[in-house]
Length: 99
Image (cartoon, rainbow, N blue to C red; front, side, top):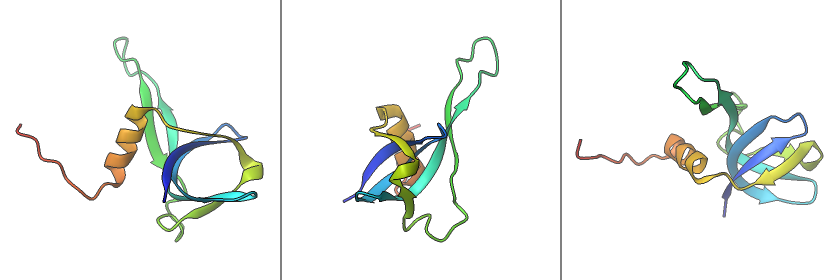
């Protein structure tokens, strides 16, 4: 069973992805994306966060990329808004609204 988690590296780069395996030396992360800050575009725009590809060009992207624990600073649960945006990005189900 996989769990969607935020992983911050010692370099302070943060990714979100489906952690499918963990052991003492590392973890396997499927569909990882980098979480990036989006600066405000105007005085009324608070800015926010966005996603950027993280190793999307490797064969293991959708199967699982091994990360070494020695490179990881923290592993945490994403806030609900971040989790929802991540799930929408990889969901194969389209939800049609009445609008």
